Length: 312
Image 1 (tube, rainbow, N blue to C red):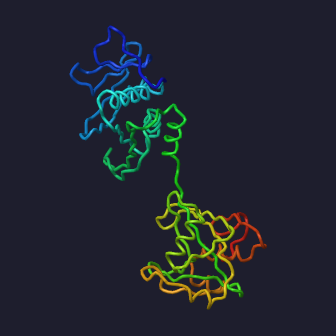
Image 2 (cartoon, rainbow, N blue to C red):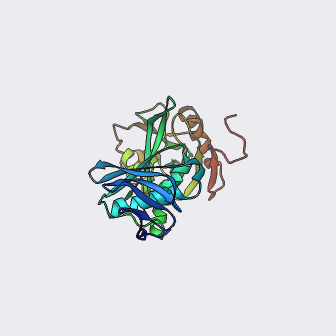
Image 3 (cartoon, one colour):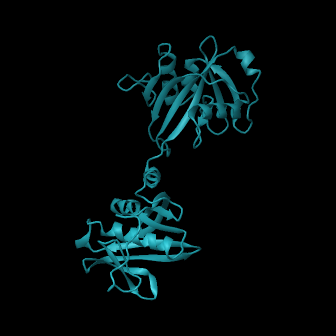
């Protein structure tokens, strides 16, 4: 499909759009927003824009059952989107597609609309509330068939997994520094969730500084652990970095704890970790502390895949 639509045939009504295989014929000469979709002079469906004001249009389409899966909806949606942005002067064309309707999600993406987010329980169908995916294309977005445009489209639809970076700080007795936090009963390692466009190492250093007030040197990677969905949280990947070996009194004297987040910090034995932390944290630390020097572990749920659970 080309990036610009050729002019309609001379005998087509004014305002018609075509890409050579699909033609969009306006419902009326005075209405540039509602079109009949034709292929080889056969009516195959309808496509329309609803003017939401402020330069925003909402795209919808419907292709007859006997003509589906032939590319008509994608071509029609692409033509109307181009028409809206280039001729009607809109700066944004959006579509709201039921989250379970994979075919329509593909159509919107192939028409150049990028996935932006989810509206939960936004529509009612057959007496049930359904989630809706919002997709949109802006005037400044590159054409979908260019490399830049293709990357933008695919990137908008890829899954996003949370990344967590914690730091393992030890004393000469191999006790591990833990923090008692204000917002939950279990204790945690220094660190936290990595922010968008922040490296895991930078995230670990930033979170540690925010929690205890020092710029701790972040050493080598110790483990990569996949965490399954849990208590309403989506899955995540947690990285543990080496925070070095320190004399407890010398290190703790440099801390300035964040009062809204950290109650106290303490170097803890592995048995204390088991008592104070979530099972996954204990499994993860038990694996790291028991690993050969220089090893970088791959874990799932805190254990090496196929290894016995230390809590069983």
